View (cartoon, rainbow, N blue to C red):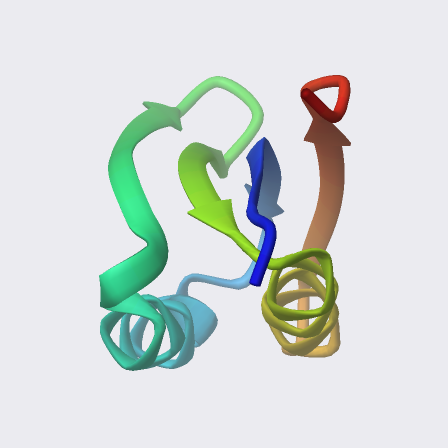
Amino acid sequence: METRTAVIAIIVRNPDSAEGINALLHEYAEYVIGRMGVPYRVKKLNLISVAVDAPQNIINTLAGKIGRLAGVEAKTVCAPAE
């Protein structure tokens, strides 16, 4: 199946959702290239970027599940198809 390279940008306003995010990233670990998290204490939120290489439906599913967690927003940017 054809894969796409993408970045999922995550903004976490509810620290209680961190466990859910980590569980989802663990569930989809085979597609994760890398991740970076930055706490932004001034605004009391965390910024996470997750690089993935996966089929488009997997990328959409993962971003959707993350975005449905309480106090979490997720958006995806995909590299052009090759």
